[in-house]
Amino acid sequence: MKELKTLLIDDLVQRVNASPFLFVVDYTGLKVAKFAELRKRLGVVGAEIHVFKNNLVKKAAEKAGYPGEIGDHLVGQSAYVTGEKDVFGAAKILKNFQAEFEKPVMKVGVLDGNMLDTAAIKILADLPSREVLLSQLLGMLQAPASALARVLQAKADKDGAPAEEAAPAATEEAAPAAEAALAAEAAAPAAAPAAEAAPAAEAAPAA
Image 1: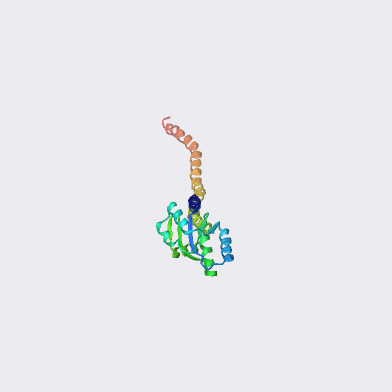
Image 2: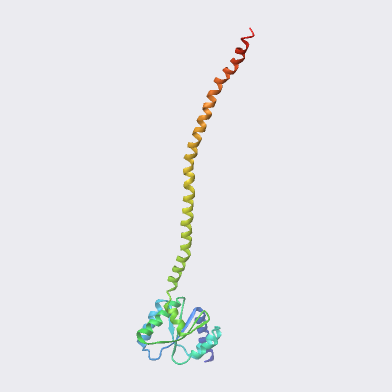
């Protein structure tokens, strides 16, 4: 009998350690059909609900390193909800099911080793799903990057435009200078013979 209890506790420890959360609910007055319906709804989000002996869960919680005060809530007709990852979905289903059928009643929860009272679990149930939160976070991270890209592109376009406009202006300004240089070169040969003829004219009176 003791060996069986040890095996059950070890199995519970594995179950608790494999789940990032644990919800404890009081299922007093909940009919078998309704309990089965709750189990079905939780299964959609990868969560499970089971009924175990409270003393076994208490020992398993101690082994798993759960806060000691959780033991104060492990009394009466308690059912235990664990899951793979979607704590938001599981909390939402429990909250909606209680609103619909008045049962089960939330007692306490544990998330990543931290105690949650009923108020905290209700707040958790009102949060978006993990996928939606990740999507919103991704959108927040992407928005500044896209805005920055637009600003940089706008600046690049603005800085590039004057350079393109300046090129024709520079060409137009250079044209008169080029024409003046050509005119100077053309005038230079005509001036040279005139300079050479001057000494001959000055030599004429000497004859």
